[in-house]
Length: 274
Length: 342
Image (cartoon, rainbow over all chains, first blue to last red; front, side):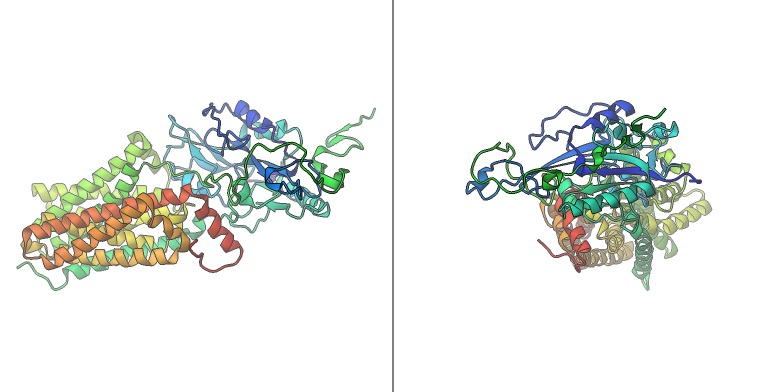
């Protein structure tokens, strides 16, 4: 990786306004094909989740909770007694986490997935053979296979733009600086300060997600400030890179293979053709 | 000349990302009693998940190809071991049958992989590197060595030619066979799919047992009664190993065992159990009856296939429901012991 500092995203969901400019900018810059114009009917979110043709996804969550001490002036059918007008929108732009310990990269049999000089995780589409192993390996449901292509695609953290000294398209397009791009160390310091500011403002639910270098994926290159539990946003609460258990799996495979051999030896013991 | 515009925004103006909400941002505090205001359009959503959507992306593997591969790889690998034993103990008919079965199943499993990839060149691409962190890479190299060896062993046995080469190939296939049969457990367990990953300690034993039962079953179907003894023994050993390991696995993985008991996966797993027991009992009690023996062998083959398809579908079911991702992780984070069924 050289002396180049690792870069990443800090996505501060507390200032996300759900404009989806990041989704559009990503699609435009990376020439991502259209993947179905569907109406989910569940929320303002018609993208549903990350996949081969969605590398930024804005989640919309409507909750009967206040944001801090916010006054919404809303009336809910469920609160006709007038005791509560609490309401909040949570909006969050999700993206590939560019894990320190990336399962997709570990399990890729061809070496198509690699770690760049920026510390990001990128698929080389000319090497990928479409085996699809990385898809269930990702604990966040990020990478996926493109229909009619067979290969897998995901966020590259705008590898091409980074090499030209540019900010990734989504961060560039974000009007509220909810998506912040920079050196990971600096982003972590900025996130810590922002979290302290949020807690001081009475937003006790605010938490950082993926910031801890000691978590199950060794810390994420793209981490978040969330206002609720991760699963509310469709994120796993405590993801662990699956290859952490691979040594135990190989030991178990060796023991099982030995058992099979022993069983076969036993099957032939003391028996001669009649 | 100086400018108000700096790298971080306008000089003296708070950046947008510093924005706060609620009273701290200068909004009026307190609640409005009464029934006026905007009506939200979206009904109460379930929390704990994002609209019930899965956290994981569903495995893209096709069930016929990949679950079929799990079964065929096991059948091939264990059959090669049976073939080598038959050679060593002077049972040529059993050896021929097992070698033919191994070569056929091995070739079919390779064909299944190629079909899933789309075209043959994509399998060759697997061999451009070797990665121990990827069970698929390890497996590709195993297959690249195993399938030709099993093929040569079978060709030599069927034609009666190249005896030395055939013997070497038989030994080679028997050496790689147990790994071919059990590595596929690591292949599926080395994912974030809860029903596959959480069972990673027992899964290789389930696969090895299922493979031995299938190879024994094939031997019972194809070998003459005088040589079928070891096939019967291997089948019994495999069936018991598989049943015990599967039971232990389901006990150890807590609530993630649910997909193994429900839906399509549940039906397949149950069918696998019933067929395994039937094949085991039939092969032991009906050893003097050619038809009962063959039927028992077929039952064991079907049982192995049902179990592999069941495990495959249990993985899909556990990936489709965010509960199996979220609940165990929350419990782990909360420092709880083994997750309880919900």
